[in-house]
Length: 101
Ligand code: F3S
Image (cartoon, rainbow, N blue to C red; front, top):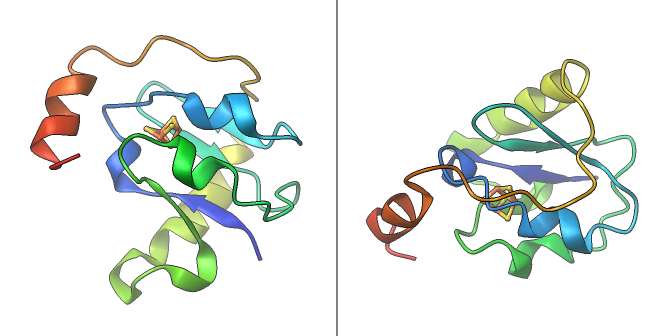
């Protein structure tokens, strides 16, 4: 099992999740973060840390969000690890509002 970053992260990338991960399993690109399923220990600490509810354990994902499991796995192989918080992306707060968060 693993936790998975999903669509709400896109365009926000608050990186609060990174600050609580005990195993440095987050990677990032220009739009969002991804969780390395091989490193994730399923502690769940990142779930409440995310201001837009972007992270869920894989077994709780809705059927139409299961594809994010494969995307996280693919993208961690292509992107660098992130271990420290970054400023959110421009427009993140507006997107957060639009998401009703
Ligand atoms: Fe994304 Fe939420 Fe982390 S917006 S970078 S999953 S805190």
